[in-house]
Image (cartoon, rainbow, N blue to C red):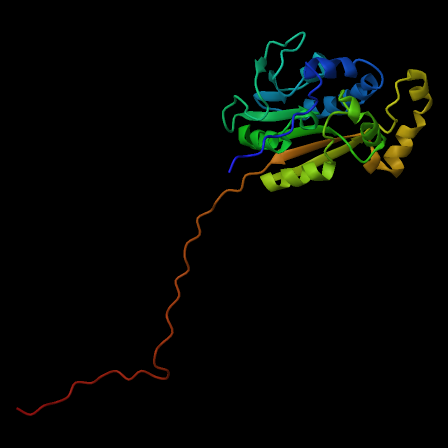
Length: 260
């Protein structure tokens, strides 16, 4: 039976990476990017190891990743960025050109939102991460004012409204099935996705109210998970004696004296 092809995401965008970079450079994307930077910088500074892999179209400034203790940082993206970093590799997030069990940490900044097969992206992340490796996921929350904005703007086919907007609980379920444990989760951006900076500034009070009263309705969520690998321990078999066939006391045989 022929496998059904995955639906293309944001098909009207000729260059998804360029469109995302442009959107995150304007209101409201730039305000969201500021919050994501503030969230990621302390997380990345606590990670350690040899390789940090960023998968998907990059929108973070280079200085955000530079704060990580992991000095070897590699970007894998299907399109070439305007200013590609030294560690840029052209590749499909669904088929990473990376060896199994070789990466210490992976960052997926809205990668699942704009991928035709997000579950496969997570499977690839699980494959290339070392045991106890960390995975950081940023995604748009469909159950928020931003999710409502997607219902209105989806018809335009423009970013970010053309994305999938997977819920936090769905992503966590997928990660749990792959054997990940949740370490941390944060809620970001409680302002509505308006394009007027002055109006967004006036609504700043919604940020504190949202964190205190409706954290599940944030525009964006952050998940940090750790890859757990169960080790198999050899268990010696327990030998049990078979029960006696005859109950009661066993009488030992005696030799009979025979007359010659």
